[in-house]
Image 1 (cartoon, rainbow over the protein chains, first blue to last red):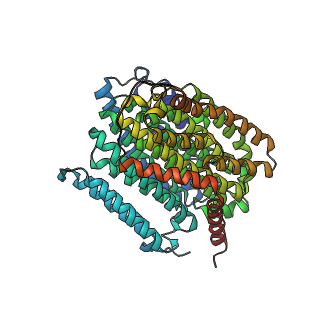
Image 2 (tube, one colour):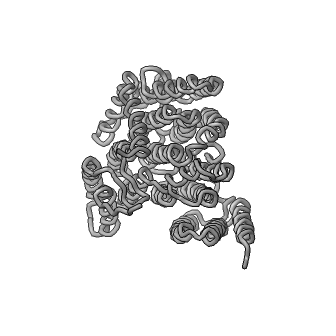
Image 3 (cartoon, rainbow over the protein chains, first blue to last red):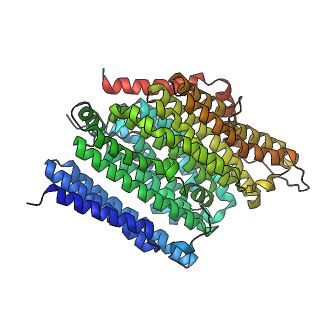
Length: 100
Length: 482
């Protein structure tokens, strides 16, 4: 049987990969993918917690997170497509009308 | 524990949901887009009536109607009522945005605010926070019809919000692993029992980070000016006033009900965050030339002032925080309705140097601006002064004198940007003239908010008492039911 720590480490590694991508990558689509990776890391965390605690709340949370991730991806992709159509770019360093 | 499906308590949410779905489904069939405004206004009035008759109680375990949620829902309804009237006026002048979906998104966001105010469960709280903020991203992006770069502000807000919700979920995972539940009451029970406090503290810090994105506390404030400038003006006032009000009210609920043993420690942690928020908001507001950007930085600073009440970690401090947010809601809606009036007349007027000599052209408008600017800066006969006064008195009484002194010093810096606007309005000369006419869409929100600003400034006691008694009765009925 796989111990709890293995799931925890997997979740942590995925979260850090997502965070790194979110902060470092310059393509809007890759940034959205990084957010999804972070959400998946949290899904793994909740599922593992729920399995090892013999408690149902974590599983419920997993389904809600999947739904919210879908909604978030929908809105993010909508905005990305609009930005590509109107501003003709998908790279963050070229979208700089506002200075901080 | 029994689960009740008591539909009487969620009547107002059901009504608003139906109206929102109706607008989205049937908007194409209406040629005259004015219907959406009247439908929204009517449904807001009926929703306030339904709130009055709806009984206290729970809908399942994760939704509860009580003193806290009912009173604050009324405040939110009042704010959104004014914002809807303002939107009508704004949309008649900016007809590229005039679609039913605008009001539909506003109503969906309002449902999220309502659910968040009465959530008793971290899952419901998270879902309703997302429901409150998703429509706002789209509302900001709607503005690309006039101003292409507003997409950038919307995307920044979206990325910040997504990051915040990821942190919130991570914090919920930590809290769940330490306490074994996501219900507020059961978290509190297990915290008084044997749960390890350090894990829960770490989890709560992540939850706080998720909330800070929405309230724009300092490490997460960079989205605010861009999103504020790119949004349509009534939506800007919605983000600045109502979302902050609801999120801080929910944070206070978390501190009062779920994480009771951590209250004092959280207050200690918040001291540098709050002081930095006030300082950075005020300092960066100084050199802004765009009125909306200036108000955005000032709104960061005001979130910091409101956070001062969380430091002491007692009921009085919390009630002062909510009172300050109520005052801020009133005065920021008033200020933005004046901005809507200026933007309707001429887009340039939102640049502060262009305002010079406004007092010669329209003394009444200038006087109202004076009231709101004094209130934002905290000059005595206005509500903003009373809010700050109560917060500082609360800090001094509970021994945090140095925090109070620093906050007063920072608020002296913060008075400069507001007085600069007044200097341009009253002390500069201009040759321009314009004929303006007062319309009910601007006149109504401005006069009500100006009246309330002066009234609360002169006689604040009943309002503070209302907020304090709400929190007190809420806690009493929650922990000792009958």
